[in-house]
Amino acid sequence: YRPTTGEILFKDKSIVGLAPYEITARGIARTFQNIRLFGELSVLDNVKIAYHCHMNYGLVEAVLRVGRYRSEEEKLTEEALRLLKIFHLEGVAQEKAKNLPYGAQRRLEIARALAAQPALLLLDEPAAGMNPQETKELMEMIRWVKKEFGITILLIEHDMSLVMGICERIYVLEYGAIIANGSPEEIRKNPEVIRAYLGAEE
Image (tube, rainbow, N blue to C red):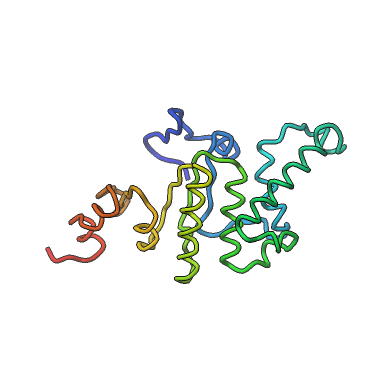
């Protein structure tokens, strides 16, 4: 989707109209509400793909598998395996991504996004389709990712237990307009939020 008005600035520069690979190069990675993995590729290859935006070898080196290709491929394989271990996926590294259980596919998608080494990670409804236990595990994972990788995370989510449990600042939208923003405690007590989402009497 392209915005019809206004600008989207990241590090004081507009990213409106940029191709996805250009946005990734600027330091932004994302996951999707509907999981978008390369289902026929292995779990390992799904993560390795994201690292390629940081590779220094050229097309000829890659085709002929010479020069910097070999050393960099070895390095990115090691890095990808490290990420898979963090997300408890190292045991299924050679499995096709489409064969993973739903929760594991979510973890793989986040691991792949982190492989792009972003400064900003966008998570679009990561708890969609998850049961309460999976959501709890996801909450801990997101909290750990923020601490371990030191990145900013922008979370879009309808699961209020998840939002209240991990977010430092919350923006509440109603029909596309911001009706409140603040800390979880401020949002919990906000009359506009109560009216819009809890059906308070007029």
